[in-house]
Image (tube, rainbow, N blue to C red; front, side, top):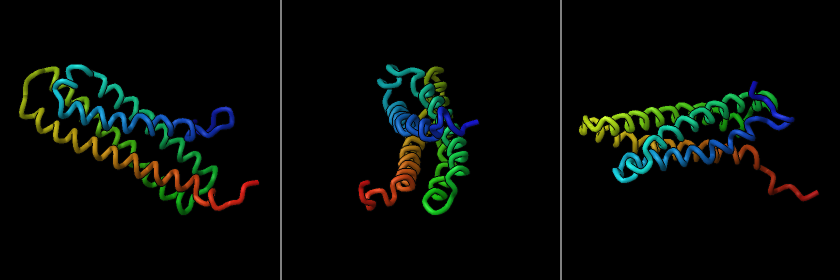
Length: 153
């Protein structure tokens, strides 16, 4: 299902959405967790971007498995695949925290629960930022390893 579109691996297309949306989700969640002014301005934007990021991350993971079957696994590809399997779940966790924060903020009650969840929001934002960096770096290494050492045609 998530193999190719017009001969181009779906993973190569979708992964760029994750590369942009995951750090954006982390930044939005961080700002939503610590800034009342930002919460007032952004409203439901943080949970919405988180949901879109989660969808893209699951599609990227699924299409990555298809691509791995096509190119074979081993070494750097396997390392990237293992890291990539975790990212959709980290993204989902961050999105759940964003939705709960938004919901509590909209209700305007349970200040103590909101503060506890805000700390979890900061941690989830940092975790998402670290995880997407590790996955992206391992993917770049898998794709570009040895490219610079080969002579130009």
